[in-house]
Image (tube, rainbow, N blue to C red):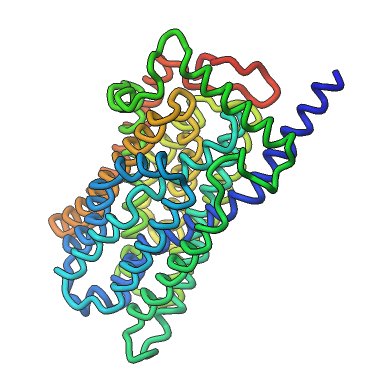
Length: 455
């Protein structure tokens, strides 16, 4: 009894230290990452679109081509992270993307914009799946949803804090002789370079090397993670779990990739076009907004989304992840987003979009706790990267198709209906996967063997 009590105490303190020492820093890296990749959405309606004479389709293509660059190197980048360690690789990624992002300050044509967006994707390739893989290697599966939920808070908070920051920077028009949107690109790029340098000295690749853990905490984490990986590798229904081939031939990986596609399509359709939609309120509802007004309105859906994300992942951690933790939000998001088209005021429209944002962000961190439950080693690195590659395809498609459909139809009806369709498809695929595979996890303190998914 005494040994069990001691083990529980060591587990509690070890997870708490990881949560405090690593998660906030990696989340800060993600904050800067997401701000840099979506800064174009704030720049377009605030001068860049007019200065570069961009149509909606051209802006959508510029937004989406980032993901093509990311796709090119995503799986190789995550394999390099697995080989060289997160400390070196994530630091390298941040410094290079910060340098490329800085060059947007002086872009002068649509062609240059396309080129830089593509190169930004190449520079950032592997960051997000690498961060997911890194955090997954520090905690056992039963704590992973909580840790990933804390990490994922950075994404909605990027818009909550980043939109007003972008608006304020754009308002510094004339600083250094630059247009406001160029000033924004200048100042949101520099933190990536600084954080990349700090990351090289701050991050640690594995628990065994963490001097800020006690020997008992290091031993517990190392043994627990090793035992968990051994269980995955030795499971009777799967073989060669650590092989790269496993990730690319796993039906579960490909279904999860399609599920993730639907969520990310919705995420980036909102991220890239919400500021433009809000700008259109002025003509649609005969009202006027300042740059800061539009920035604050853009931030509105994301604060409730951060709150919902926190409590949703907390519930999944306490009670064990179930299919409805992912499929339920997908249904709500898929049904709510088309309703935004029929609201009669800016307030009502933003309220419905807030429901959609809450749905997307509630599901994503819970979703990412699933792949590492049946993949380990090189297969985990490749599988997580492969799933995220599907998300990057969705990011490109969301930007380009949304802009193209807007130009073709003259409105956002068709693009938002398409968002709803993909999210409902994600829900259906998640339920289908749960009917055939074991994807649920036990809650902390319960039996730790695989459990059938509760639908």
